Length: 169
Image (cartoon, rainbow, N blue to C red; front, side, top):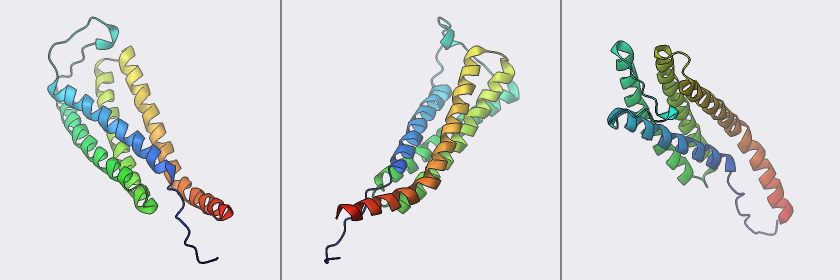
C-alpha cells in the first residue's frame, strides 16, 4: 500500500431490494386495512372483482381484530423499512434492520392469510378469494427468498466487492 486510504466498497444491494419489497407490502396492506376498517360505503357488485363479502359472529369479530393488527403491523413494517433504506451505507446495521422489516412483513402476511382463511371458510370456492390466497402465498414465498438473500448475500457481496476494489487500485 502506498498510504492511500481505500474507499469503502458499495453497499449490498439486497438490502435495498428487500426493503423496497417490504415497503410496498406495508403500503398495500395498510391501505387495504384502512379501507376494510373505515372505507365500507356501499356494496357494488357491478363487476366480478367487486364482490361483497361479509363475516358475522365470531369470524367477523376475529377478522375485524386482525384488520386492526394488520394496520398496526403495516405501520411498524413501513417504519423499519424506511430506517433500513436510510441506513444503506452502514451495511451491517442496514442488514439487521432489513431482517426486522422482513420479519414484520412475514407476520403481516400471516395475518392476511388468516383473514383470507376466514373468508374462504364463509365463501368456499369463490374464485376471487382463491386468487387472493394465491397472491398471499406467492408473497410469503418471495419474503422467504428475501430472507435467503439477506442471509447469503452480504458475505459474498462484500468479499467480491473488496476483491474487485483492490484489483481496480
